[in-house]
Length: 114
Image 1 (tube, rainbow, N blue to C red):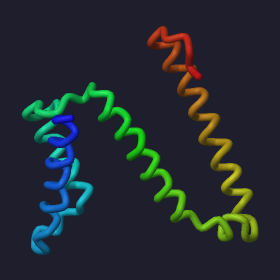
Image 2: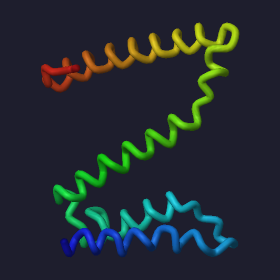
Image 3: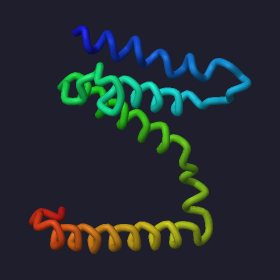
């Protein structure tokens, strides 16, 4: 419980770094700098293997993905021939990912590329 309190207290430093208008530091950059300073790379005050932090990482990633998805303009994608380009991009990305996964599996010996 103490580590969660410490994480929340330190997490408030990121937005505080963004307060001065002269510096113009984005909040996300402040959060990254604070995490670097107090995490495994810095003072090691925060244990990255804590299961509570692992859960918070997953929740944070889900929230970021929801925000990103809310900024996608779906009607524009399906207007005209845009959907064909979008479909082509998905297929090309999936193909590159599959070939890359198989290549990495061959090089590293890890036999589960999926």
